[in-house]
Image 1: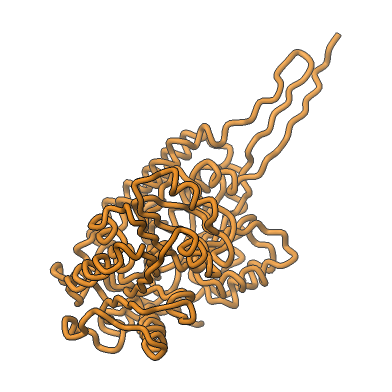
Image 2: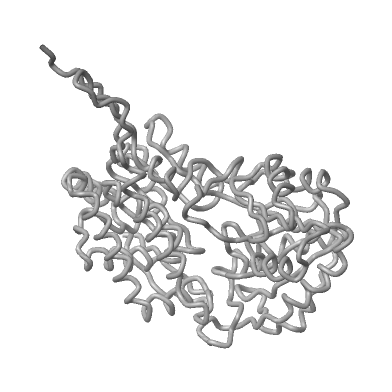
Amino acid sequence: MSMIKCISPVNGEVYAERPALPLEMAKQVVAHARKAQKAWARRPLDERVNLVLAGVARLNEMVDEVVPELAWQMGRPVRYGGEFKGFNERSNYVASIAADALRPILVEDSDRFGRRIEREPHGVVFVIAPWNYPYMTAINTVAPALMAGNTVIIKHASQTILVGERMVRAFVEAGVPADVFQNVFLDHETTAALIAAKSFDFINFTGSVEGGRSIERAAAGTFTGLGLELGGKDPGYVMEDADLDAAVDTLMDGATFNSGQCCCGIERIYVHESLYDAFVEKSVAWVSNYKLGNPLDPETTLGPMAHKRFAATVREQIADALAKGAKALVDPKLFPQDDGGAYLAPQVLVDVDHSMAFMREETFGPAVGIMKVKSDSQAIELMNDCQYGLTVSLWTKDADRASRIGRDLETGTVFMNRADYLDPALCWTGVKETGRGGSLSVIGFQNLTRPKSYHLKKVTA
């Protein structure tokens, strides 16, 4: 039996391991979920919603377990707590809109005809969650899927192997039936076999582009619905009328928080030439104030990356950019804890351009490149010069200008004067190689259900 292991970035040792389910046992998990789904869907909506919220509340009570476990598994400093703020915000919001989002569309209710469109759950939803924000990304689908009447099977990345266990334990202890929400440990081969066998009615995956391609290949010909949130290279654009200090504070936080391992983290910044020098100077000072170290130390503000191989990718991109003429501005002597492994110092690069992978390929680390631009049109061209499109962050006092620019940008979300945030009232979606589909908002409920039309001709005298 193969083992799935979490190698802790804190010390490079195995922190947790679980046996991978053999295919036949995994099929039994799916069978239990499918058998339980109809009865779960027949429960009143408010009952399903309240049980999900009870599960959320129970998980909040596990804070003393969850926070240090996250530090050990993927390196986020304990000083930032868990992911409870976003986890709760998203859960509470989808609960508040569930009744309206799932309400039938009434076309006619007369003495002759009843015509309406209802939303019906897909059935068994498979959630493949990532390690960077393992609770928040999972709840984006888990909460609305369960509320809508689906059963859910969750599989987490090996780097955050304990998260699915914790979530399912909390929800089951709160009253969600055990077969309605289940956690599994699967290797890639078994996962692909289950998908190819049409075991699931909808699959949501958050992860790498290549991971998304693998899922699409496995699902080929099954007509299984897919929601894919994949890579990103999100840009910021600082215009001449921007609030400079606010832009520096938000964009640098967006570029480096969680060691830069954020789906919608800022990875490249374009600054109008009139603010460029001041923006760069303030940004370097901002980043230089981090304290890199053990995430279990409450004084640490920047922990290790989740795995040394992720840090190696960042170092390779930086080295390539420097070889092509870029300049690194953050003094490495400020970060003696950088060990060449998972512990990686933050960095700001200038004299960068789009011939460098650092400005076009996903970096997913605490490093950002800054380029000078002369106009909106130049900034738009550069922001679109990328195979990804999740979010962009525009900095200006002019909302009309931001809207005009936003219409020309190939992205899923346009932010003005903020960044690195998921608004649960809006659809979370991407374009190009960032993926397809959308979660949260009313549209998230629509993607986790299917329409069923009723045309009822009534008997008349």
